[in-house]
Length: 372
Image (cartoon, rainbow, N blue to C red; front, side):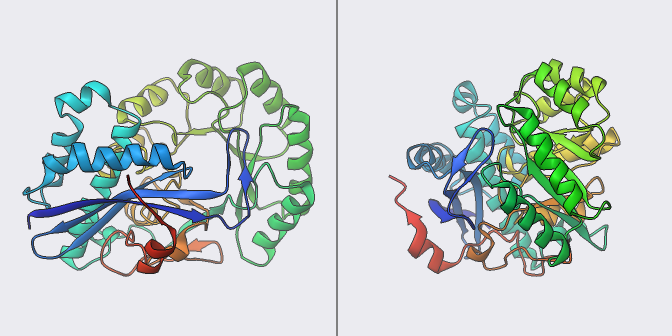
């Protein structure tokens, strides 16, 4: 099963809303940037990272795939994923300029595509290929109702619909206004609107400093917040550890961390309670498993960040014993042959062979962008 071709691709897919914003970002489309790897026996594997659909930087990723990684992969055995991951991740010239950022996002896409090939070759879904499901259901938490750009009225209406009509028992609300009292008021209103049993997490997207977070957490102590995600700048281990010691609200983070070493630093410092790896920012599934096993060894729950909108993470969450719940954002699901599906707040287990990463041909036609 030799690697015959490596073809990069870019899709810019519209969101479910005209636009959304959190404390740091404002976007109208989600970028699906990755690679199709075809083997000598005709199996096609797809892998991708997630971006803000910024075409110039998306093309940096596809250039890395085609110009840097593809020459190292052609003719190799596609099933030899562990050796190939090391070959790419530790290639001296690329390691010199990379180890994070563009090179790691490109590596993620390649690695996911190789796992997709292996599961397709075996004729089973990825979760089955990895060893089988260890749980009957993975709970979903709905992030798409809680954007900072939503008015309070829309936030309340979306939260109520998610709970009362769609069956979600977990929600995530974005925070990060210049005046944190606005966020306290919004969270109080949501807490009063939905059932007290509904678990509400919050996400600051790294905007606030430590004193602001400390004051906010003190003000939010009676709101029964499930976790506070990315309260501080992404790489600030010390401040996250100080906040974790200062508040009863558990800290969650990981979507901006590129390596298992970065996760180890936060875990060793006691700076994180909910570990949130993402295959699209780590070096794909291979490094994700390393992070998930690290969390399990410390008896910490793994709650993946949905940079691929959970197309891949639903497999990993059903399989890995540290996983309990999974983020739900339905932006890109209808552009895949096997889209994610949530019913009554629980993810359906994928059934088709592979990693659920094969885009629809019509989506390539309608939303594909030139890679150069």
